[in-house]
Length: 352
Image 1 (cartoon, rainbow, N blue to C red):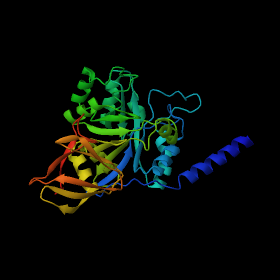
Image 2: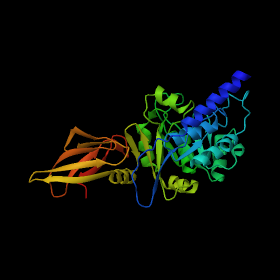
Image 3: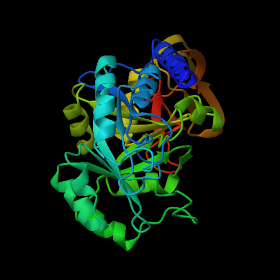
Image 4: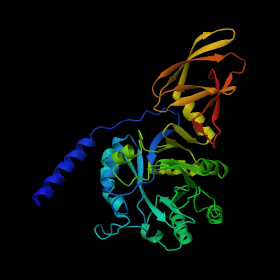
């Protein structure tokens, strides 16, 4: 018992110290919006995760996030011999910690079914127990009745989609009934190009989520990631309702490694708010620009007429770029800004 108490004291001291420093993520100021850094998919010991709910709040704050949803499985609870099944408890346990850190905590669950249709996260739920139903249609209809925002999780997860993501008749049925309105384009350490195309074609809100089960630092080290996948939410206010409204309107961008994924409108908005320019010289044939990146996103440029020549603009840095001088500007692809698979956003330099 003394050893256990000592270990608990050491662990508490470690967690308290770890949470005392926040690694801020630099995002641009966009008039009329709060750019919130969010992760809407994670697990605790109350399903198949390995950490306590309060740890998820502390990790998220330390990593510079603004909002999270703890989404433990309804149907899969392998720790139930040691941790009583209580679907609302993770939110209750993490709520005070999150509030003390200024972190927005959203009540959520993962509806866990075999394929088809697979797994779905329901966010902003009111009564988790009522959603826990054997029939997936009944579960999703109950989530909708509670006003939840529902997204399809990891459509390309190899355990359920060994040959890649497939939009099945069951998904079309659920989609037409309005039982889900979002989709994970990124989950854990994978991203699904074909799913990005679905999000565009069917106007589904884009998500990039960690689906973390272990301590976040273990996950990052194991997958060689600098940071977890993040969903950037363009909210009109910093609140749960502000996030809900933004999700409903599709104002999100998924951020994973060096990729920014989402609707063209919001990718362009993010880029133009992040990058400033200074004209150094304007010659007859070329204009020399200094482009400065005021964010933690990196950008990869390639002239549309010369796509093999790539210029990298790293986070928080400047580069010099010589641009062919034309009346209407020269088209450049920003190769890591993708509204669709293999379809980068095009901008013109110099910037207007």
